[in-house]
Length: 382
Image (cartoon, rainbow, N blue to C red; front, side, top):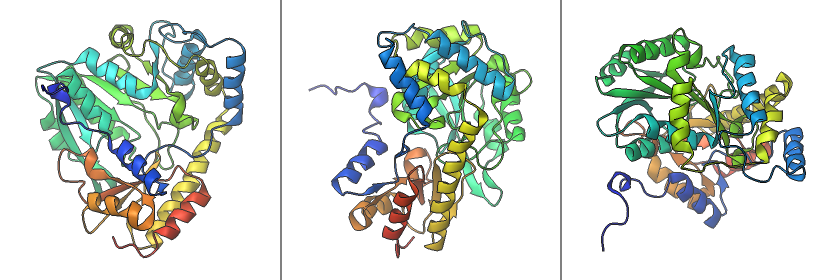
C-alpha cells in the first residue's frame, strides 16, 4: 500500500500536546503540559457570547469576519499601539492564530523560498513551512544570565537571497521571552535589506509580566511589511473559541484571505461579537487576567525552585522552563507514571539538540492545582 501521507508531512506525527494530554488522562495526572487555563475568562465576555447565541449569530458570518469584530480589532491596535488599520481592507478574522499563521505561510512561500524563524518554536510553525514547500532557517535562542538571547551573527547568516518570510513569535512560546526593541530593530533591518515580510505571532501580547511588548508593526518602515497575528484565546482565557485575526497592508491581507477562505472559510459566529465586546473592555480587565497569571507564574516557579529545580522564570506567556541534569524527554515520559504530573519536553520545539535537557511547565492553572502538582513533585531529581 502506498504511503497515505504526503512527503512533506511524514516527519510530523501526532503532536506532543495530544500525546501528553492523552497520557495525563490515562494516568490521572495534573496536566501542566498543554497551555490552556482550567478556569474561564471574564464573565462579561462569556455573557456576551450567550447573548449572541440567543440573538441569532449562529449562521455563517461574513468571510472576513463580523464587521463589529473587525472594527474592534482595528480599534484595539490603535488603542494599545497607535497603529491604524482599515477594518474593511486590512483586518481578517481567522480560526485562531494557528490558521492565520498557516494561511500566511501558504500564501507567501513556496518551493525554493526560505523562512527565518527562532528555535525553540511552536510546533505548528515547522509543519506549516513544510506544507508550503519552503525551507526553514532556524536561529537558536539560548538562556543566559540576561535572559533568552540569540546570536546576532547567526541571525544575519540565516538571511539569504531566498528569504521570503521572517516568522517571529513575541512574547515567545515556549521560553516566555519578550523580544526587546534592539532585537526587533535588527530583525527589521534585515527584513528590509532582503525584502522579506515579517509574520508576527503576538497571541501573548497582553500577558507580559516583565518588560514591554513592542509590536514589529510599530517600528519605522515596518507597518506595511508586517503581518500581525493575534487572538482572543490567551488574552481572555477562552482558548476553545478559536477566534484569531490578521492585521496587514491590503495586498498582504488579500493574499492571506485568499488561502484562508479555502481552509475553514468562517468559524465561531456567536463568539465573534463576544470577542468584539471583550476587546473594548477597560484596561482593568486586561490587567486582572495578567496579574492573575503573574501570581500563578510566581507560585509555580518559586515552588519548583524550592524543590531544587533550575528554573528559567519567563517574562511573559503561560510557560516556565526548567533545566535538567538528564534528558527532558525521558523525564517527561516517567513523570506521569511516577508522580502523576505532565510536562512537555522542550526538545520537540528544536531542530538542534539545544533543548534536550529542557522541560516546559504551564502555570495557567488554578493555584490549588499548582500547589497539588508541586506536592507531587516533592523529591523528584532533576
